[in-house]
Length: 242
Image (cartoon, rainbow, N blue to C red; front, top):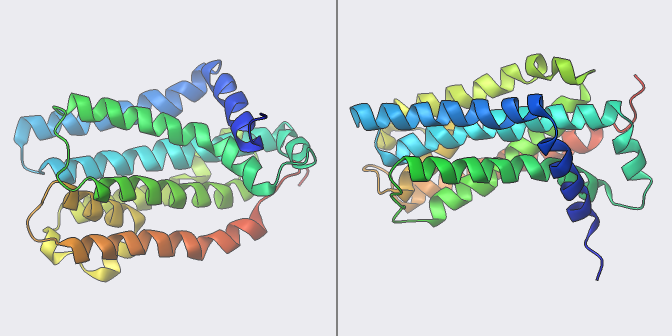
């Protein structure tokens, strides 16, 4: 039985990723180092709480691994005419984009597992909350990567074009982390980083947030992805020519 197109594309991307030292450093080492720094800070102070610290780690991985590295990969494959060739191969547009971006999501999953172990292996009481934060966060970051790739002319410039949204993602996460869970307003959840952090808090029974608050955060992530998806469909560029 033949594997689906997206799986074949993802497998090829994983092989190329493993052979690129710069891509591994930017997509794996740097985000993991920042995430482990948060683990160390939480162990040292104990002020944030397990749920908030995990939310900050997840926001870092989404901003740097899934979004920034994903954007860089899309632009690189477009400049190499790989996207154009994949599109005329019979694979659907969704399969091509999913296959190209999936390795970044898998890399983020591996990084997250390492951070959970480094953080003492404490598992959440409400596992569904961080799982939804992870899945919905990847969806938002992936859609943003497609949009940003459209106005990024070269892979070398991806660090610049992704900076505003990446900083907004991280800023929202730290904003929510510094705000008591019960005081996070609905309009703050418009920033995906804030929604991710707020939702992850629920997994470790942070005080001041209930199931309704977690569902509001999850809804905010889904709405953000649904709002940006039409723009991504119209903006995506397959041809390396300007």
